[in-house]
Length: 141
Image (cartoon, rainbow, N blue to C red; front, side):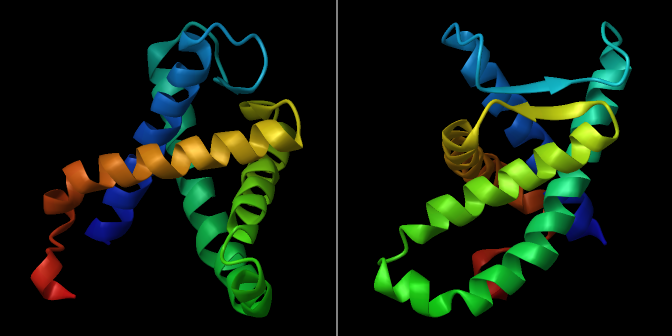
């Protein structure tokens, strides 16, 4: 349970940093997160945590199934198809959160691919920092 909570926090922080990176470069388009109550910092944190859970569920269930089924395609493209798959999963999370009228907004397919790429790198870095909190060390594997 502790690993799941840490993973949700890592996803939320990575998504927050990803949206900060997109807005830091003056992009009026791309990837944004709209909290369920704009202007309220608690609502913003809860929105990022909810999106972290949503990312975890979509990536854990659907992402794993897609990676297993598309394994020959991964081999054929030397893994480059993972950029497209991650972008589509990113867009799926945006579509689900759009259905509840707040959350992640992505302006198109290539923004989704770029957002998923940035989210993956930032999530990896944040995960390295927060790994001791999950109780998981390199020797445990």
